[in-house]
Image (cartoon, rainbow, N blue to C red):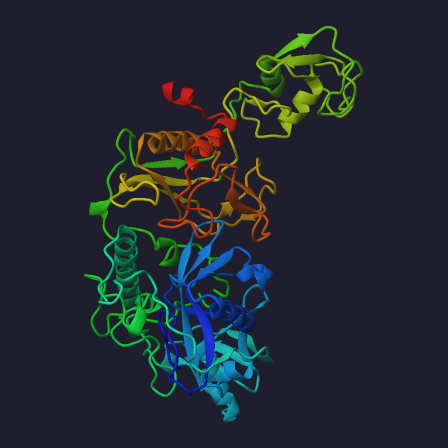
Amino acid sequence: MLASGGLGFPPQNVARVVVWEWLNEHGRWRPYSAAVCHHIENVLKEDARGSVVLGQVDVQLAPYVIDLQSMHQFRQDTGTMRPVRRNFYDPSSAPGKGIVWEWENDNNSWTPYDMDICITIQNAYEKQHPWLDLSSLGFCYLIYFSSMSQMNRQTQRKRRLRRRMDLAYPLTMGSIPKSQSWPVGASTGTPCSCPQCLLVNSTRAASNAILASQRRKLYPGAVRQSSTFAGGALWPPGTGTPAAAAGSAAKGEGLRVAGAGFGPGQGVPGAPLPGLNNLNRPGTQRGAGLGARAAVPPGKSDIKPVPGVNGICRKTKKKQLKKSKTPEDVVRRYIQKVKNPPDEDCTICMERLVTSSGYEGVLSPRGIKPELVGKLGKCGHMYHLLCLLAMYNNGNKDGSLQCPTCKAIYGEKTGTQPPGKMEFHLIPHSLPGYTDSKTIRIVYDIPTGIQGPEHPNPGKKFTARGFPRHCYLPDNEKGRKVLKLLIVAWDRRLIFTIGTSNTTGESDTVVWNEIHHKTEFGSNLTGHGYPDPNYLDNVLAELLAQGVSEATLKD
């Protein structure tokens, strides 16, 4: 295999198969499918510095965009970044023939092996070996071709594997020019000193150092050599880490950032952690590794509290409804009885206000007759009291009411956000459009858990994809005001909810709750970044719609 950071190419007149790969949080390069790679190559021929929308060829990858200039994959709904690389293999190898080897995961679906493992298995299969030991590549598995199974040498657990034919990966003769990854000096090879480049590259080194250290402690003998066939390196010599290789600049050289390199043997090992072989989709795992940290400063010394904001962390737990407030008490608190209602529709039950509520017979509360009509105090909209009671009972039951017509909020609205943690601090870098200000970084972290009675499916597990999620605000007066209001919204459990993802279609998962955040640092490739001169005003309006206003800060 010939590896390439940036958009490298093989020697002239030497045909090579192109496989695009993304780096997961465990330091392993995972191949995109052949169809996706053909799509990327087609876009690359048109614009070597453009963007590739992966959902155009694979609907399951709808949230993902590859930026060819930075050689990173972005997840649009979370802002998660992951390095990508363009690798070259021999045309006679498995990807050149369209052969895919897969193993059966715990969900009874099939997961493709890493490309170098796939090639190794295919080579042994073609030579009619009865079995194959993967320990030389850092994997404690035996492959048995007669039973088409994979066995863990430590646990003796067996899994099925299969060999299937797919589209062959694209072929290239090296006619596509290289493109630099994160911006570097024009002709000197000197790293760019802009805040974005310093942030990303120093982060890349720190993240990989931490990852390598952790894995050396846990699996001291699990480091595999960075070669797959013909002695070719997994990444170019001198780059030190896979991430550095993914960020290689023109002329095949890695970005030489102070402190970013590692000596021989100190690169991130490619050996997998046990039980983590099912990472077959980019960005769908809990972002605890490199991808989710691609915009995190390397050291705590650079992180400062936000001026004028108390603390740096908030934790939430499930809030309980005050027992003293019955639903009937809540409805009566915010309405005035109307003796002679107008002859118009109740917009909750769609019955006339002069007739009984459509919920007559469904609800039988004490003291509320089905023909009673009430007017909400601030907005003046009128409804059957029984209808308001039914609406309240169908909601969060937090002691507040929201007018279904104008969305005016009565009381303190709270949401159904699962327990988690919100951190906020200052980092010494500027956002596009706010060059005179530092940046406020917010980190949300919510673990998976079990849904409560206020959620769509009580007792069922919910997922939390893409956490921790990093969000950014300019450190100016309005940015600090937005932060303070977001803290209030977090405490009221309004930032996230459990529902169905608009981008992936997954149900019972943690999703944003109508308060938009900027999750992209340093650019606006996905629409979730800066510059955006209207964002702060827009998010203030969204917070107000949730009942979180500046008046809240004065209470």
